[in-house]
Length: 174
Ligand SMILES: Cc1cc2nc3c(=O)[nH]c(=O)nc-3n(C[C@H](O)[C@H](O)[C@H](O)COP(=O)(O)O)c2cc1C
Image (tube, rainbow, N blue to C red):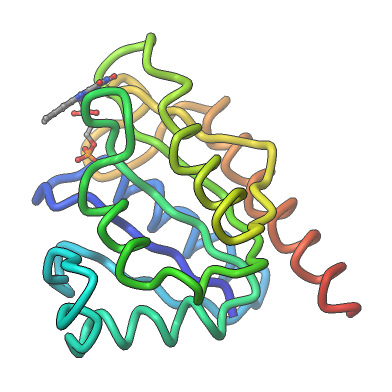
């Protein structure tokens, strides 16, 4: 199963469009896919204590644990993924151990393209995740309404999906 996490809390989020486009690609490839949308499944702020017992936090932890790979879509806020994305990782911690992870970012401008690296580094250092070295960085002009319309980003997204599943399959030995 491939888990897609959409971390934007915005009602008309662009990174959610990236997440949903991934779901479409994976479904076309006949892969089992789960979408966990943080705007729909509210998580408590991680307190290092009782928040781990929250039902949505537990469900996300189980999904992360059972996923062959995780694709995370996030807005860029202040040159980083949004707080909701980091909070989701804080709440699910060790479930990420050894996972293949792909990252997709929606940005307001062209200059924040290294903003995935804080999360990527912590996933590699804390949990030995294999971060797929293909990142999606999409600004507002890549979208029209509810759709990703930029052809270059469409191609990059398709490549991210195929590379992520290829690496996950190789690790599973299939
Ligand atoms: C609090 C806040 C901080 C932001 N910081 C950045 C930033 O550092 N770099 C950038 O390119 N865009 C920044 N943006 C713009 C968002 O990344 C952009 O609106 C993006 O589409 C948000 O993702 P979403 O549509 O999935 O919610 C910021 C937006 C907000 C609300």
